[in-house]
Amino acid sequence: MEIKNANAGTLESGDILVQVAPSEQGGLDITLESSVAYQFGDRIREVIAETAKEFGVDGVKINAVDKGALDCTIRARVATALVRATGKDIWKD
Image 1 (spheres, rainbow, N blue to C red):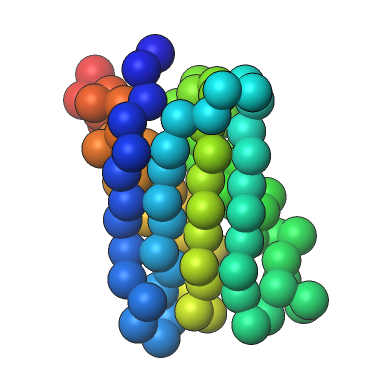
Image 2 (cartoon, helix red, strand yellow; image 1 turned 30 degrees about the vertical axis):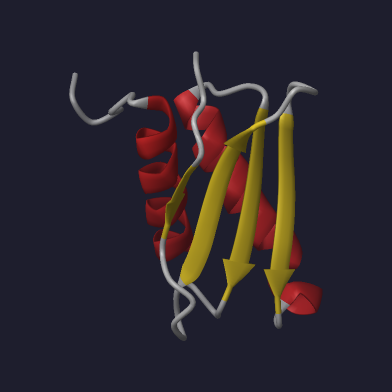
């Protein structure tokens, strides 16, 4: 599956900016910047990884800048960025 550069979200309070790019190394590489990473970083990474797994992507780098987003917002932003990056719409079948 071809991965293109794509993003979703904003840097507004309560949101998360998710940027997706191809990675030559394979696997899933997650970079997280968040003021609450100490408390919630593991959960944010987990939600990102779960959502990426649903898409079945490999060789993807995901950069996330969190501004206090809830799990549902994180899922929505990652899914949107991956739809844009892959052209694969998981809700269309």
